[in-house]
Figure 1 (cartoon, rainbow, N blue to C red):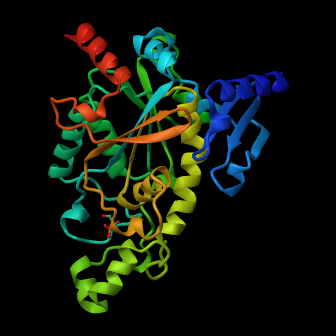
Figure 2 (figure 1 turned 90 degrees about the horizontal axis):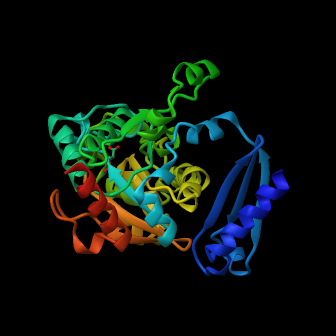
Length: 340
Ligand SMILES: O=C(O)[C@@H](CO)OP(=O)(O)O
């Protein structure tokens, strides 16, 4: 059975043209009879020599359960158009303003909620992406990212219900089971992952940014905040943050695009900077000047094994010509017809 699944997977990768890419990553996950089959083309030197990594491993229960409550999207028009175009959307949102952003404090992994302004930013972000399909949501384990994802989804035209997955124990999983297939189809699974958390800011957490600059010097603090490989005292550098955030993205999120799913990630300034660095192939010099505003959604399209940045949907009521592919325009039209 695993061999059949493996052959199907290879066939799908070939049909997506994934073995012919010079850059980028292609991966596919199939779950069959308790086996998880991961087929991955690595984005590295060996990629150019067409090195293929095949991993067949026993499925972990948490992996398989993530997709369990996902609606079978084959019933809606989006999937029909997706099948034709083989494209999927990726929305990245940095959380709205938090109470410590407002106070100008280093936050890192301290779990601080949104301010009223942050709540409004998240709702505004939701308006901007209200016509972009979302089948899966990933957030960090921190409340500011989770609030942002949930508030944004209150604005979505499709009106599916985001449901937080609880895979922390068999009991949590069983107690949160949904017993109606139709209801499951109207839900969007929300997966929370600590790997998407903000970089851990070490001994700077809770300190005022201006006072820290006054004490250690502006340049030193800028180096701690924006350099790629210099960590703040006892904290994570961007490079260290990327090791867990990008690894999580490659292992858990990328396979969703290959399966045709549209994904939203609500996370943080630095975990998203590291993911954008990977998606846009930025150098460690280029990433220094990458700044992300709170609550502004960014859109990528995954097509033929590559991520293409489409900018940010322009405004709450405008599609923004650059942001909409034909498939997205069709999705918007269907939503308008259905929910007018
Ligand atoms: O304090 C933090 O956790 C981050 C994000 O707010 O700050 P910085 O912009 O300095 O990386």
